[in-house]
Image (cartoon, helix red, strand yellow):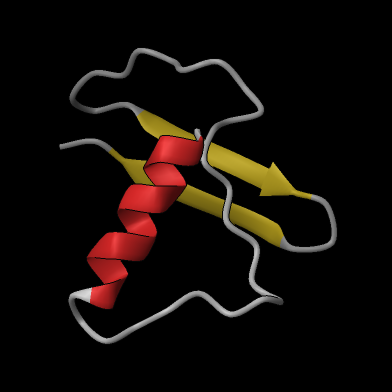
Length: 57
């Protein structure tokens, strides 16, 4: 995970962009990956934030 964050910081620096000390960078997932196929619709629900959905085409 640290390598991924280092890559991100280096890539952003190419565009003269940085990560601020108060910004949160998550380099992994809290849940397992799920297989999806064309036509699937996936919804994620976040407490106090709401829902986000996507359909795979």
